[in-house]
Image (tube, rainbow, N blue to C red; front, side):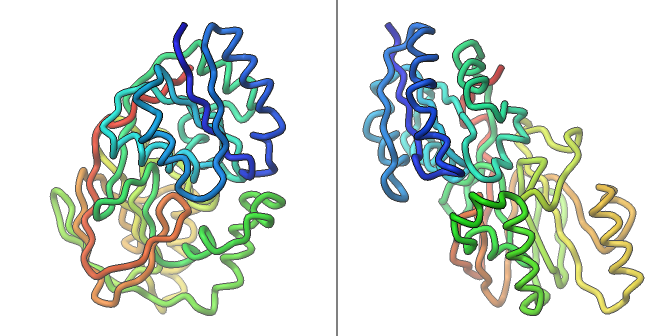
Length: 295
């Protein structure tokens, strides 16, 4: 009998993981797996579980939000594992899971894992720290890691919008120089993101046809600042309509590596978690580093 390690975060989202744990375990047991379930008690537990116990299991399944998935992938990559991973989204926003097309229904997601097949998914590394779908700086980024979990649980995506709106007065342009595989970009930006997802906080979205999570490339999105209201209007329309080639206010390119210099270091968000800023940053794509099980 194949062994399955189920790592779940009992506090993710509206605590769905804890409520549905027995049902999910039953689904995997009926599918022929010997299930061991481990709850996370504090930040970092999922990473340690994967490092310590992952090599002894045929499958690792994570049930929680994107942050818990990030921890599992961090332990997975750092340990050099090739074990197939399953992801049951049970967080407040589940941006990455939506981009992957994973079911929002916990039971259906578990069944899809039990019958699915693994395929390679790219992973990012930010100055040595693993992230799964987005590294961002600038406007509204603080809201992703500074909004209380209780508010995220109650309001989901709206929590990020409301928290971001309260910080409008603090928004200031950030001067940055970004070197990609093919070019160099320099300017004053309101927001910047290196991503491998179609959704960022439920606010900024990319077209599915513009994002291939297994192509060895990340998408870079940069929003410039301006005192010209017409240019600001063009930027807002481009973002709302996802037409990123219609205004010089917006840069949208792909690359496997980004070297970023921000003279005045600013803090970042990695998968919704805080990352202290530094002046020099290297972001690299690790192609198909994770074997993710999908329907």
